[in-house]
Image (cartoon, rainbow, N blue to C red):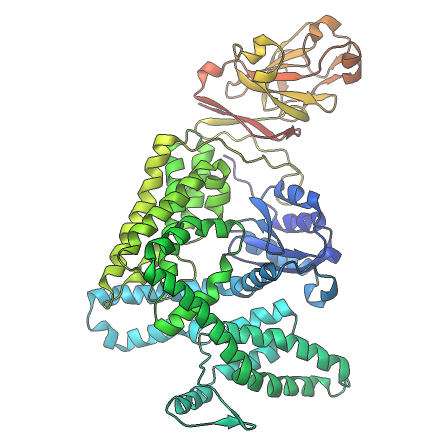
Amino acid sequence: MSSKIRDYSQLAKDILEAVGGEENVVSVTRCATRLRIVLKRSKSESKAKVAAMPGVITVVENSGQFQVVIGQHVGEVYDVFSSLVKVEESDNTSENKGTILNRVIATMSAVFAPFVYILAAAGILQGSLILINLFSNTFVETGTYQVLSFISWAPFTFLPIFIAITASKHFKTNTFIAVACSAALVSPTWTEITTRITEGETITFLGLALSQTVYTSSVLPPLFLVWILSYVERFLNKRMNEVVRPLFVPLVCMVVMVPLTILLIGPVTTMGATGIANGYNFLAENAPAVAGAIIGGFWQVAVIFGVHWGVTPMVLANFELYGRDSFQAYQTIAVIAQVGAVLGVILKAKSQETRKIGISAGVTGFFGITEPAIYGVTLRFKKPFIIGCISGAVGAITASFFKPSYFAYAGLPGPLTIVNGISADYPSSIWGILIGSAIALILPVILIQIFGYGEDTAKAAGGKNLLNGQEQHTINFQQNNEEMINAPLSGQVIPLSEVPDEVFSSGAMGQGVAIEPSDNKLYAPFDGTVVMIAPTKHAIGLRSNSGVELLVHIGLDTVKLGGKPFTLNIEDGAKVKRGDLLITFDKEFIQNEGIKTLTPLVVTNTQAYKEVIIEIINESKVEQKLLTVVK
């Protein structure tokens, strides 16, 4: 397949135009694979229009966000998109905030997504140190270990500062003020104070007793701090003279927000996070199979709708409170189950294109990112996604009997982070994760070989392709054993079996489709040669350069018209290029004669190929992929 070099700058501009322009954008963030846009008004046609753009996997509207799933190139699109909209200066009053749950999920996504790879990298480093210590009893005593260890823990120790940076952008408040306030929470001096309080000393601020809450590695206290700070700062900016504002707004914000957090916000939100974590832990301890089934079976459903960030505070609270977390152990098994489903499709598929997409998606799944696997393969065929969810549940239930846990946080749980489940104090944990992961990987492969992977439900992308920012014809890809056939005319796509002519509907002439044309021009669907033109000009036979023979019959019984409504733009034996105009016809004349314009397209040498794959689309556009012939 000829490689496409997409112009992601142009894609960002096209997305912005499709969603209603800069004036309709409230905010924009990104995660590993998605561009997450909050819109003032969501138009029903925007979703279909963006989803049809080349370079876009799909579009999900959820959690108050217009989520454009792009894959590994989302950063390139985000950089351009965010430069085109001045979201930090936008007015919040017109934002369609949606339900409370949607706003919570959207906030978690906006806050954690930008630095998730930092946490993932730190988690992998911690897992690597665990693995090294298994083979060396003395490594833990070396300076090398100590340096690498504090490097791996640094992002978690100073997590409130990361949160301050991203949350300040989300809540549109001064980033430096937010960082200053959050840095105070992780100050070594505050840690010393809490140690003294723990030992029984009473310390007060303005007569109010301070709690022993520590804020290193905390999530909700800095998040709520920045949220409330955004209101305090706006209040002060509106009322302070602009001469003193640059100095006294930060001063007042720090003096107000830091004490307010250590006196009230911190203890209350920490109690809330602890309560949620304890609720999950109660289920995991008393009904581990139920917890495993829910997470292993439904985690990827949460990923589809982009709501998976909502569990982050609970997971981090578990590590902070107990030094371990079972949720990520089950989460890993769910991720591996989708990788197994993709592997099953790769082994079962005959289409080289499907296998190629599967391999690419499987690689990203190996790193804990499953959106390409879900949208590109498993959900596209439906059955593999369901099989993956079932396999994830079975694997997690099996693992639950071994009390699995992670002992180091994994930013992106997946195959690479399995070592985070190793602990000398809980030796059965890693065995449970390994056995559950093996089931999750192998079971979907077996089930897909037995039951197949279903039919492709993806709609082909419309609109213009993106090649170096230029308009271009859809690429005729020929690699190994496939050739793509474009739609030769625009219109409604009809299954060949529904054509009211038994010669075509029976499949006796070969496989293909029919199109009810919406215009009056027929174009070349590939590079090749004209091998036949009917004397009455109503039908044309084409042969591609690789040997695919295609018959295009314009209308049914149009032979009766003696060629009157048809104008030829080519001659028999002519060489044609994909997109060349072949025939112009008078659609109204044909219909006025009481004759159907339904146009069958048939691969007449179907028997020479393994498979003719028909794209699942309702409407065709000229130069849009319609058929794929597999040798």
